[in-house]
Image 1: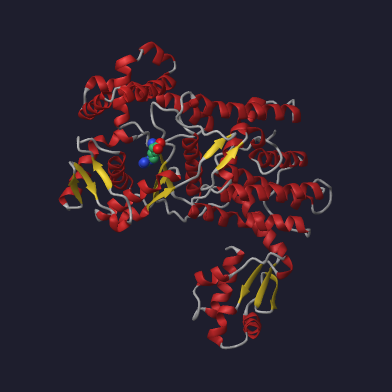
Image 2: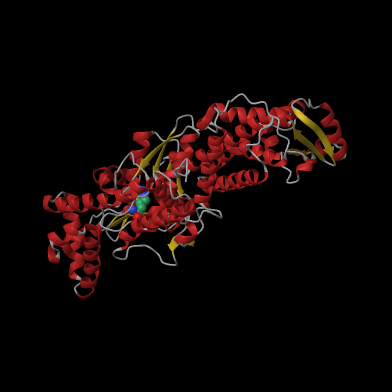
Length: 563
Ligand code: ARG
């Protein structure tokens, strides 16, 4: 039981008639000044109930509480301040971390419930944008955080592999494309064809009609078109996988929009049968006025379906297949209206489970002021960003530790980790620009800084040279170690907060704070000095390495043992 839970228990014994445990838990504060204890309970909310001055209430209540396990329980004004008994607490926190290892912080909040996570989801025949990279990195971290509290994440790459743009692409390829040229550099050439199509279509609007017709035939199963489309798709996935491999991210499903091609009719029928949709100028639409949302287009007048139609079918499929407890869509904030419409239409259809679907939006990242999006040639750039980061990391390692054995491997872990960490450390809704040289620094609030701290502490443990026992007899009395214990003890709570808010930045910020405290400790305390506190200091250091490594792993970042 955490110390906070213990305080809740104690207070609840006396106050159960007036406040429940959740209310008590919300009232408990963490004083910023440690002279006011480690936790404090303000009694203001009891003044009305007991009709007494707050100070008197605090005094009387405190006198009834059993202080065992605490150094002291003290009243200051309207507050009851709880001071944790350091020895016992140190033993329990450090002992728990050392014995549980990477299981420290695991809880059963999710009870094994399925959570499909729609993440990455780039569009085929287009380069993967910075936005898709963000979705990938955020989605993976959210998956890991949820798994830590026993949800079962299911990673789904909802590729943009269907829609009228494939009509355009096929018209362009058949009109002026060259097989050999496309084979040599598929994604870039396909983008070129697409861009050319739009240029030509400005002079020759007929091309648009052709494209619509071709897409319609593709939907109806025209084999020639299907073969071309399959080829475009295979080549695109191969290119995307290079980035996924660098990031060490693996999907459970590559079910893109086309997968729902034969699953949309059911939704369209339900909408019509229940009288939710109606026909307007030949198109099938759902009015969403009462949700204050734009009208939802379900089927165009030529019979072609839309992005939204496929997402409706997708939602049904995921509910049936996974019986999800939550269903997440990690997609840029510019699609907020789309997901609101999706949920509103599902709700109109009578599906209360649409309340368990959550759009997890995020802001835009740019690199050196430039947006990496659909302009041609940019896919190379994204992979290039990661490779450049690896190079910068390698130079830094070469300067610091030239004889490192697995330097290449470590440079990859540090370079890629730096980009990922930078992406995850700010609140996901923030938009930001980044500069690679700053991101791959070993100092400052960076991924390499956290990794370096981890490696440095490992070196200390290696120098100690003995097995680190997990039987703890805590005997440290300095302020630094106490700050570290408090942080370590918070870790399980931090994970739950990150999971509830779908916010990996909570973990990233925590990792930075813990690394900073650990470095302070390293600078101030002679950790390896032979005296009767040596073993406890090493146990503390070991506990920090366990938690740092785990926090990095929740961000999908590796922790090299040496660097
Ligand atoms: N392919 C889309 C895009 O690049 C993202 C798909 C998101 N997932 C979904 N189920 N709509 O904008």
